[in-house]
Length: 78
Image (cartoon, rainbow, N blue to C red; front, top):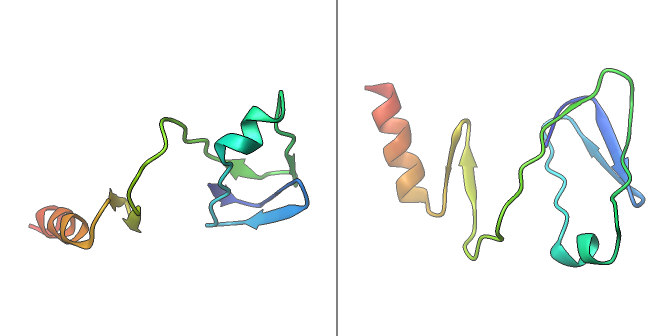
């Protein structure tokens, strides 16, 4: 996730507030992934086992369905 700036990898460009997703095949076929970033760019790496469900995000809330996102949002607002 690019929180500030711009990142490029394998001919793809990812700008602020966009998510770069690398698939298992991308990683398995390479010993490393090369990134190029503009000065001052800030990025966040998130890793783990692949999720089998769709991932929904609203602000700081992440869930596998809209119901859980709404419940989290309501609990936060109370």
